[in-house]
Length: 147
View 1 (cartoon, rainbow, N blue to C red):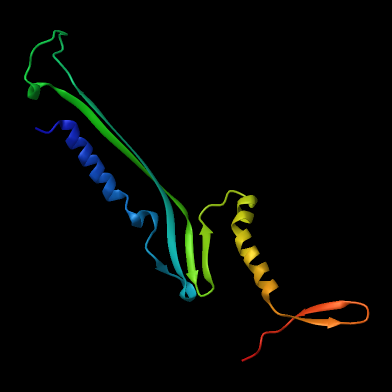
View 2 (view 1 turned 60 degrees about the vertical axis):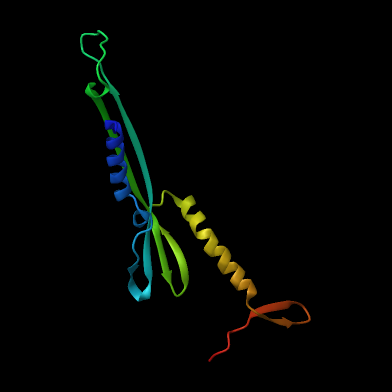
């Protein structure tokens, strides 16, 4: 015979399983302007608790009672929190993460730092023309060949 707490826990866990799936964390892609694909990203947290007990008669005396006739009291609870983190934007230029919330300038600088480093590295890779004079050497960026 199954204990009542087992069925309560099973029902609660099935409900949570139905609410929290991969599509809750990584949302369905949406086509945006100019061919971009936007994918929402969320943070999901959940908690679960269950408890219960069997009680004897209310007069405080211990009696021998069959196990299936003991009164049972119990309960379960769960909470789910879904917070948007940002959006992945995929386009012909690459993939960028756009945050849903920014709390300040420092966080924005940290978010833009990888792009800045990538741009600087790319600039250093471009071929340069050198012009040497009697006094000084100048470096000029070569223009890309025109097609």
